[in-house]
Length: 467
Ligand code: AMP
Ligand code: ZN
Image (cartoon, rainbow, N blue to C red; front, side, top):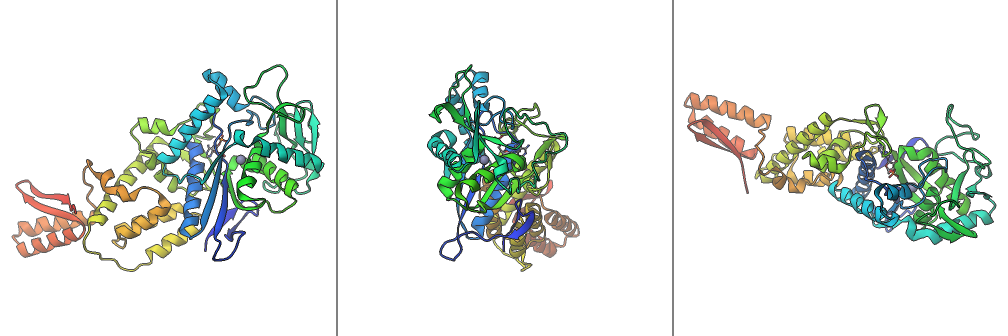
């Protein structure tokens, strides 16, 4: 039974899709995608890897997953208080390109990152700028139902019209966190947010559309409501993002979506991934502590080593990035490839049934406990209770490309497992004592673990079996 921590109820709950029945096990999954004005940093990518694990675990549990990811290519402002510049327009100025070129370039870069990290691509990629009519329609419906008001710079959602506003983040009575600063402008209430912004009169925007009697552009939150409902229906199973989306972006998505449809809950399960930090600060595109996957590749570190690093920490725990930890993850992954290649070539199976598969499945079904799952992989390898086929089955979730282990491992020095080393030492001792029968027996034992021993003038030489 799959259990997931739901931010909405603040509990770990058994997962039960909205559409029940053996004949229809389709799960609707919406994951907030990147704002494409710059490279994704490895913090952003942590969130996408967590979502990928979720999707893989759902599939492993025999659900069909309909996964939708948006591309935010308009409307995400530099300030969460509906002030500031559109990040895309800002990126275009920085690089002296059109907004469309910027969006196109960073979308492709993001999709390369997705591929490099072995993240299963969504079934539907959708761009905000391709769904403007859907967004206008939602704003119009909200206006018709009396949820909006207009200011000089846009159409705003009146959060006091919704009695359970802020339920996801547990915001109460329009209270603000102590010390939080909010630009009120002409807003009536601190949490009210822009559904649609009017283009500034003193500046020509590159992206703008005719609606509500003048030129304007959508707010960031309405994009996700419009696109998720278009592809997944008025109510769907799972919505994810990074933890920073809880208090504003997802809170506002819920308010406006439930106001449009009148159906609750809009989404049954909300899952959020914790931050990747750099020192004590979260990694942020606006900060100068920002590392990309390309930087890792330039340093000769494989993207999958970063994936392996991420699997070692539960998605709901903060993770502090360090180059040392990444290097250790790279070494760990190489060892895993070595062991996988050895198990692949191993002719004789010596499996004891210690329920390794059941324990692995219980770990991932327990709110995606990947650190535990990885520990079980190593327990299986170290105790010789796992075979190649089982490892490949586990890799449907881990996504470390273990089926390419032999290629990954070629051209690297052989790492000798402890057990093999112990047998080699015993064999050296037997040969010293001219106990040839024992020496041959130990050679056979070593062969069973996937290694050949040759006796050379410099002593025993060990190589892997090649099939
Ligand atoms: P953005 O492209 O800024 O809209 O962010 C893309 C995704 O990355 C969102 O789901 C964010 O919540 C998430 N995110 C942003 N910063 C971090 C971080 N330091 N660690 C993990 N996830 C993050
Ligand atoms: Zn979103």
